[in-house]
Structure formats: C-alpha cells, structure tokens
Image (cartoon, rainbow, N blue to C red; front, side):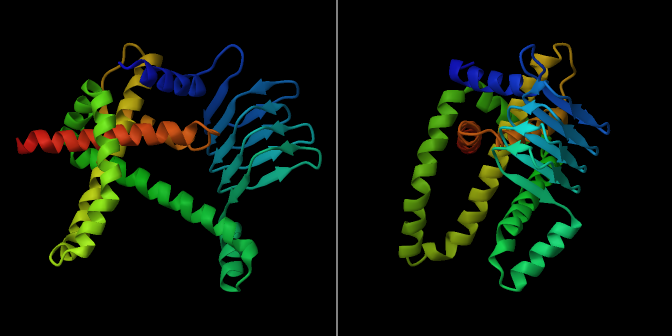
Length: 276
C-alpha cells in the first residue's frame, strides 16, 4: 500500500479509535458526559444526549439527541445536533460552528426564507446539505445491495492500482470541463450532454462507494483483526468515516477528494478493462 495512503487512513483510524492521550467517544443509545478537566478528541452519539463540561479538541456530534454545554465547556471544533437542541452556558466556548437541526428549527428557517429574511438562509443551507448527504448515504447502501459484484471488482482494482487510479481520476476530472464545452459547441454533441452528465454522476457515485468500502475495510481490519468480510459493513463504516472527515479542519476535505479521485479513476479503469 502506498505510504501516503497508509498515513491518511491511519490518521482516520486514530480519529475514531480510543488512544491514551486523547480519545474519540462514540455511543449508540446511551448518554455521554465529558466531565470537568477531561479532554477528548471527538464526541459522537446516536439517539442520546451529550453533556460537555471539559475540553473537546475537535467536534461534538449528536444524531437524534441534544447537546448540553455547561459554563466550563470548551469545544475547539463544531457542535452539531440533529433532532435535538443545543443548550449552551453563558461561559461555554465554541470555536467552530454551532448547527442545530430539528422540527422547530426547520419550520422557522423555511418561514424566514419565504418572508425574505436573510437570517434563515444559513440554516436552510445546512438543512439541505445534511439532507443531500443523507440521500447519498442511503443511495450508496442501496447500490451495494444491487451491484455487490461490480463494487467488489471496482474495490479490488482501486486497491491494486492506488496511484494509477488516482492519476487517471485526476486527469479525467481535468478533462470534464473541456469535453462539456466541446459537446455544447458541436451540433450533435449538445444532445449527448444529458447522457454524459448521468454517466458522470454514476461514475463518481460508484467511485465514492468504492472509496468508502476500501476505507471501511482497512479501518475495520485494523480494529478487528479476525473479522468476516462484509461489503455492506465495510461500505457503511467507510461512509460514516467519510462523513466525519467533513468535520475535520484543513485536511478533511483533502482526504475526501483524494479518496473520491481514486475511486473515480478506478471506475475508468474498470470500464476500460471491460471494453477491452
């Protein structure tokens, strides 16, 4: 495996796996409390509440729960709550963004938007961004069920040709805009734009799934050495990790772009091999 890829993925493994110096807390259905003088990297819960009185170096994410930041809480990253509320003490410090998405919040955002008030627009953008990511997540898992053989083949191609897949994907991505311009300026080509656009979206989608499967496979293998292979579990875990990557400052988006470019290049290699 390429050393740069190993470094990027290991960084992600350390993000989600507990360490001695700082840890990431992930809970399903049970509340989490970061007590005073305690330091953690990230706190993520599914269906429960997070209470912070200590220091969180990166992000606080509650999916289906609320976040309580006491007066002594310090969060150096973002605070996100889906389906709950964020209660913040007057002395609590949050250096990143605070995003709260719930039924009342959505209603108020839409009301402000239709009244022409600019205050509701950022919340509406956050809501649509989350819904878009949720749709991509569900669609990706659906495609894993429908095309497991193709995705496994694509995953193997990318794993065996990481550097080649990246540069092929990078080069073809650079050629997308000139090719679109060529289709627009040609007489017949303009009718091919919808088909080309659909094919391009499908290629990036399958590349994204392959990248998630590879990331999930490597991470699960690092944590559970003796596990049974499962494409669905690998893809599910990888999609979660890619979603979390979006919250990492500076390097998160870069790692996601590298993984997506590798996956897209793998799709091109797979199609080229099938045609040959």
